[in-house]
Image 1: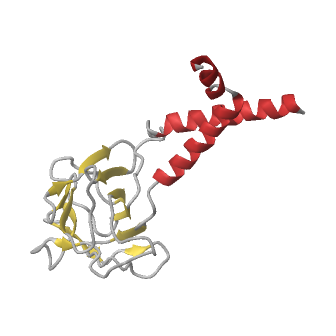
Image 2: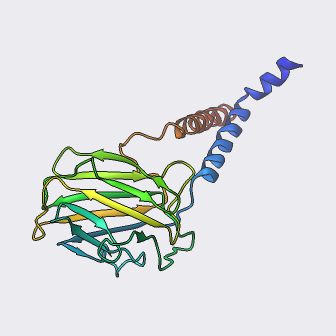
Image 3: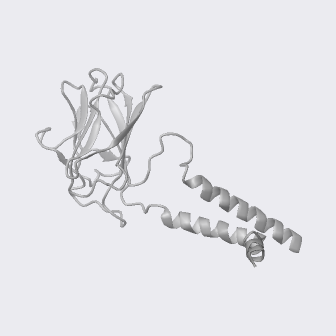
Length: 214
């Protein structure tokens, strides 16, 4: 009896079914887009704009502070933590974020790892920082600790410590708020590889079965 069950489970049809089930599970497990806001800026401060779009509804204000050695999102000139998404931006799926990325385009030597941080003061969580400091553009990617998020109206601090003073006449940057995982390399996430492998194997076996049946 056990041999018969094992043979059925390892049949071409079963493998194909497992593959399609894996694809379905992967699709269900994928996070729904809640908030994805790319924007950019230049100079010494201002309200961030979506690329080619009206001023973002997140309500962020950024400045070059500390004699142009710190880029920060600020409220009342840095006297208070900023408030995330205080205007209730919602692209029909949600209002929170779990990732932030900041890239220097020009006007400053680079980013210092010390003093560069994103803290959700409402939950007391400091986000994980990953730095890419080689090449002409320098970048930091922040990720919320597992199981946490920056929710609408959370208080937070976001400081990027710069390597020297920025020149406001040349300084420019690009940034991104998102609820999805921001890759820091081109390698797929390890958790996605078994699902992809099972899907490919199942589709291959199903194709072979259809060829033989024809």
